[in-house]
Image 1: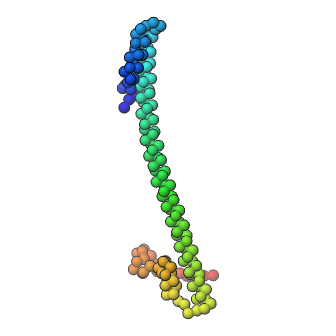
Image 2: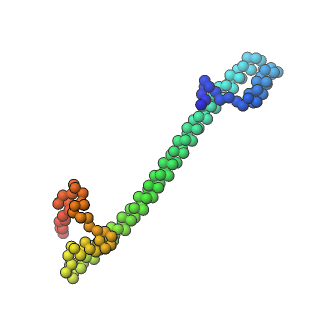
Length: 146
């Protein structure tokens, strides 16, 4: 890890080239050369800090991408299950509606017939002992009103 106190080193060949240019002293005084070396160290340290930030942001972005993919898959599964539940509800309502018409117009059918029809269609009624324990008689009975 690099920071302002531990700058990322330049490749040795490149640093040697820069130092040779500065120590040649053709166009630079020694104070200007040392100032340039100090600036080079500062820029190198800054570059190291920015590289660390980029690495952190890259890791976070990869994690976010993975999380979004998981959420998209969950959403897709939920929509598929919603479609299946809607289709099952439509089928149950069709069966109940048909049974109601028969019960009102033809007669001779009872709740047992409805339960058998629902069971054959893959929608069996739950056994009383399999109902959730927090259900009360008021929740399982129906009052019809017009």
